[in-house]
Length: 243
Image 1 (cartoon, rainbow, N blue to C red):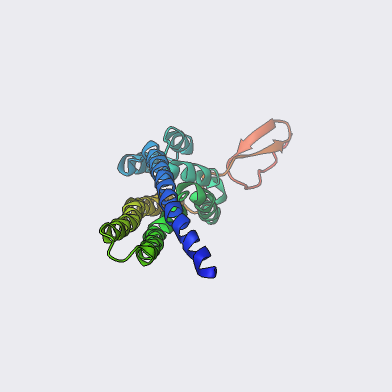
Image 2 (image 1 turned 135 degrees about the horizontal axis):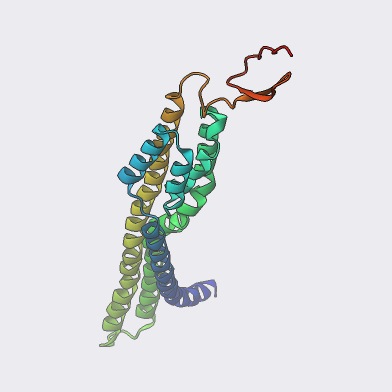
């Protein structure tokens, strides 16, 4: 009784596995297309962006550097734009914000990779499972066929051939998923590397500033008797002029 139920489940399972693999293949193609479009729209010319950022920061023009980053749609420009907003706070703050910005956007540029990796690793096994179920069904039919029936063996061989198609489909689904996973994972790693390289440009510009420099110390306004407000550079005390 139990064996008959298991054979019935196997007959249904082989078809279910085939439909499952076809559905997973459609999802895989959709994820691959979405990821391709995501990275294509956010391509970055690292040489040009690094050069414009370096020129602006060496000239002390953070506004120009920020504008160059805003005009760029890449993920690296978004990360550097957020870190550059903390330029006045020093290198320590820039490093912390740079790390935070990368972590915050990692979910966006790594989206879909978990699905592609899991599918690439397991689709062949799903196909193999379908093949096993199909072979079980085929041999069950062979056992119940009449001895000497001319078409019995032919039907069994046909059933085994159909069952093996499930393994072939599983491999066919896995191959593009694995290739896309490796390609997009490399692109995600490149984003982090590029963001780190551009961050080094910002940190180098901060390190190149003279001691006590930064953007310069705002001149202090002090009260001088008889002369109203007077601007005195630095934080040195002004001498009081007698009346």
